[in-house]
Image (cartoon, rainbow, N blue to C red; front, side, top):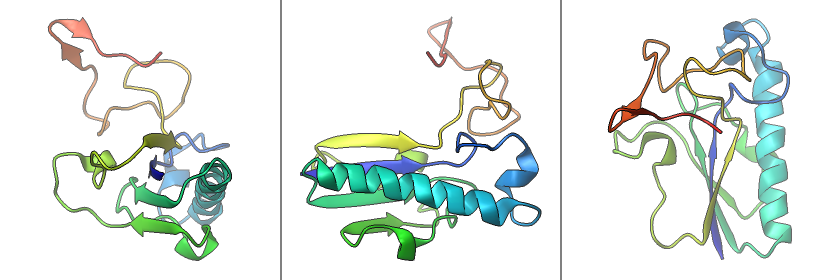
Length: 135
C-alpha cells in the first residue's frame, strides 16, 4: 500500500508568526517540529500497513524537512518541479491514500493566524461564484 503525504508548515503545532516559517529567528525549532509531525504521520502509515511512503515537502523552498529523521521506508520529494499539482506534486493513481500535515486554513478564514491560499496576496477563491472555504 502506497501512501502520499504533503507537508506544509503554517499549520504545524505552535506556529503563530510568519517569522517562525522562514529561515532565521525560530525557524529551526519549528522545522524540527514539522519534521516530527511528518515522522509521526509516516510511522502511523507504516503501522497501518503502508509499504511505501512519499512525502512532498510543500512549504516555501520545499527544503524544510530533515529526511534523516523520517522512517527508513520514506522517500522525500524536495524542491519545486514546476508541475501543476504544486503542493501535491508527485501523487498519481498508484497511491492508496493521501494525507496532509501542517496545512493551514484558507485566506480570510478563522482558526489559524497564518491563514492564506498559496500566497498572502489572494484574499478569496471562488468556484462558480461560491467561496471555496475550509471546513
